[in-house]
Length: 184
Image (tube, rainbow, N blue to C red):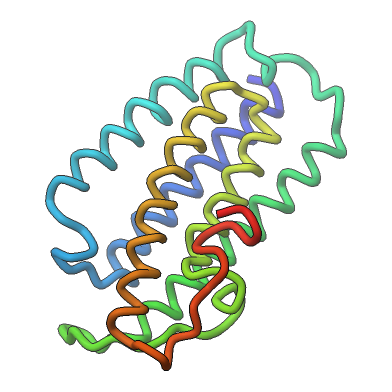
């Protein structure tokens, strides 16, 4: 494999390893935030679009990632975006986790990096991380995967904004954007 193919594999593997560790040790799911149907929908998204489509379009001998890297600065920028995205996403998940006690159902208004910009900075930072993966893989399948993911996260972010407004009323400051500053 070329350096871009190996790097893409490493980034995607680290992303999903982080997701598994967050699921085991950070997230506190409820039926309202993670209905059973979402388990199947999310798994299909990961296995079909990431597992098959990105894998085929990135690791095949004729892929753009199979060629030598003509734009190393794009690769460096993409790695920086990936790191900022993954670390920002982890930070947002930790903030959200600390709003609820173990086994509790109470919520608070999240504050911290990104929460003043959008309702769901965890989704914003995940989008940034996938833009980083795209810059390394240079794969159309990564664009499709990210577009589907961003679309779904945008739906969840709108719902969360509405839930915050209903739950906290005037104490919650309405956000101009729910996920991507100035865009969505």
